[in-house]
Image (cartoon, rainbow, N blue to C red; front, side, top):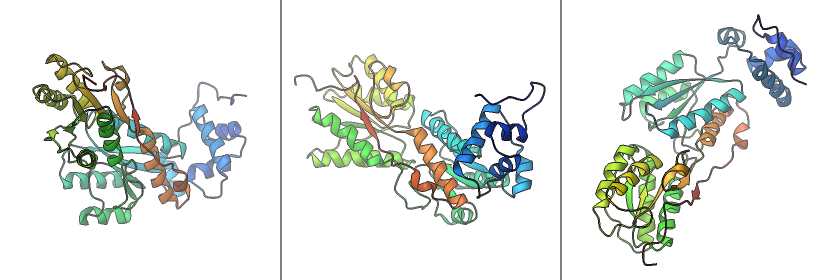
Length: 343
């Protein structure tokens, strides 16, 4: 049976939520304040009723009643990359499921340390109980370390709260999957359009490319630098199109691969007949590129959810962190890769 909704001339209140969830108004209040003595199943029913009724928590009142804000902060780089949006959606989803809201602060790409610190301080002033960093800043730097001592902080790409933790998705494994796929098809070498090495992901993918080629006795050709954008991929594609013996390229992101393929097409180099292209991310457009893009999938929304769950677990001193699954990259083979001509 659907919950009985309040009359359309007023907003739902806690009593309406209590009726829909089959609990007392006091239990609803305990759930909203993060009281520890509430069974998980009861809390789930209350949150389901809140969502169904469209109940909106008055954040200031909740904070006064509980001494908590239930706000997570997130610092991100101001850009239009799909990965940032998808990761943010995962953070929002996990936060909402656990009774938290998310507030964000954006910094410019390649921002100074002082810009990161100012964004961190701004989120603290807004009441963030914990902060997720979707930016390449070191947690154990002296200035950041003082802040992370007072406010729980996690970098979105790390597998735990520790500054020296491994990445939540192994970026070396991503590079290895991509390069081995091309070599196993019979290509003699693989060119690499690198990601911005300001980001650890770009560095790790390049390192894996170099390592795999070295294991096969191949001297890596020069890296062609990129900046994650289609424009930088297009510039790299013009360079590669002028290399007669280039037959395979590993682009560090799907968005660069789109620009790369466009430049190859304009130069009369066919994909995959003349040059195979594999990339990273598996964003929504990858399957609809022409040709459809072979890529290594990263579960961005799961990464965001995992980061939020780890942070909430730390804030609440719970064991929820144990339920966060391991996240593994997956090679998705489509139409942009094939054996070199003559094989």
